[in-house]
Length: 311
Ligand code: PMV
Image (cartoon, rainbow, N blue to C red; front, top):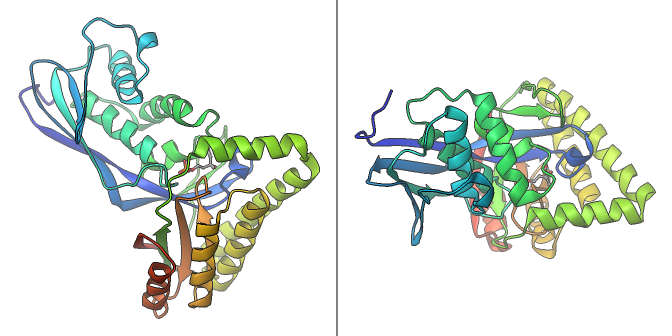
């Protein structure tokens, strides 16, 4: 077990949803993968009292306060983890550093919570299933009615086929999948887009639910296409998934510009990823087309393009 005189560093990755966002809130399946290249890191160093810092943001952990009166998600996560372990939040400086852009569909909130939980636990045993449940509770502050997909992919750092309320399953990838992840640079709150989809389900149930079920069917086909390595079908399914998300009102002019630019430059498929309205999109590319699509995304306004390969 690490002692309080040790310095420890822990981290958690970003995530991308390949297929099924928003519909997953309505118990349709979704496919998501970790994006290990960008992460939240927490470095815990000895200090006289618990203090949490991220750049110029600092919060001292109050000495005598109940969990109920804490509102800050970072402090709440620290408190919930310590409570689960039967300890008080260890006296230390917790320095949070992140390369995941916030409010951009990459799960930065869940990654912060996961890394804080690991830092507070230090050398105490904190099973992934427990950390996952603790992070989910904090996600409810950020999102209202999260499906649980973000915390699951981020805590386990594994690709998952996810259905709300069921045990997550891994999925097979028959052939390496090359993706570009492009950031519109516009932040957007998932809570708002999820709320707007809910309002659409209530005001136009037939229209909205037919799209949500169609997305579920696409996810099932995508799982098969991934397993068999049918890249061109996967690309077509991405286009279809994006069109249905557009119908659900969660695209944006910036996302449309990036999806169109990627398609015109030779991507096999492209779609928004995550909550939408801004944030990130993904493009499926061959290794040969990767550089041209990446350049087209930057020319169309992407503030960052990350390459990732699933194998
Ligand atoms: O925007 P993100 O990275 O938090 O992804 C949200 C995914 C949604 O399906 C839109 C919401 C959810 O809780 O699953």
